[in-house]
Image 1 (cartoon, rainbow, N blue to C red):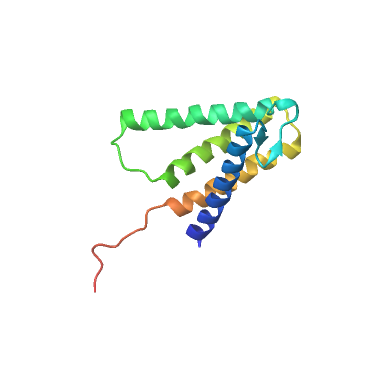
Image 2: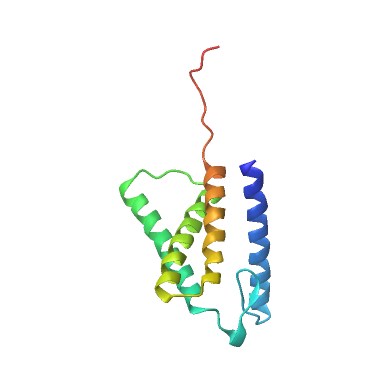
Length: 132
C-alpha cells in the first residue's frame, strides 16, 4: 500500500515540477503548490527553506561518505532524505521569520510525504535462514 501511495505522490510532485519548469521558460514564477509569484518574487522564507535543505542534504551525504561505507541508494531514498531536510529546515526558517500560520501547511505536507517515502523505501526484510 505504501509503495502505491508513494508512486502516486511522486508522480504528482513530478508533474508539479514539470509545470513549474515550463512556467519558468515562459517567465512565470510558480512556487509550491502552483502559486504564481507576484512581482516576480518567490517568498524569501520559501527560498531560504529550499537553500538550507539542499545544504543539509549535502552535509548528510558528505558525512556519510567520509565516515561510513558507501552503499547504493535508490532515488526514492534520496528524495526521502531531501524531503525530511526540507520539512525540518522549513519549520525552523518559518518559525524564525514568524510567517503566518497558514504557511505551515507547506511543512506539514512535506513531512507527511517524507514519512510515506520513508516506509516505502525501507528494504524488505528477508528471512534467509527460515525453517521449512
